[in-house]
Length: 99
Image (cartoon, rainbow, N blue to C red):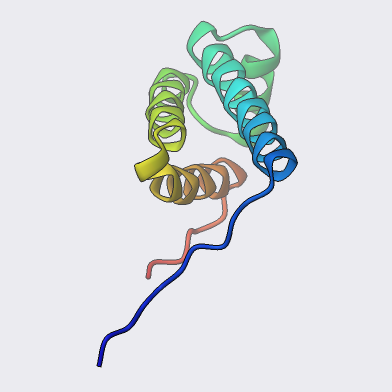
């Protein structure tokens, strides 16, 4: 039994739409990570409001940068997406489901 898998051709416009959207996500994640590392007043206020120690801000920023790298590399893109989702859940104070 041989299984043959074929890949459907992707249109050029769909490919460029995906690239632009991925680029926007990467730029936003870089911006967010930079803010966590620089600790401007809105970040300090948000951490105080959420009850998180401000010392965790730099660690979160570095973790976000690692997620950006994992997301930007095509082979590790899904791993970066999962880690980013878990990071967002942690930021909200919600437990992340373990699978």
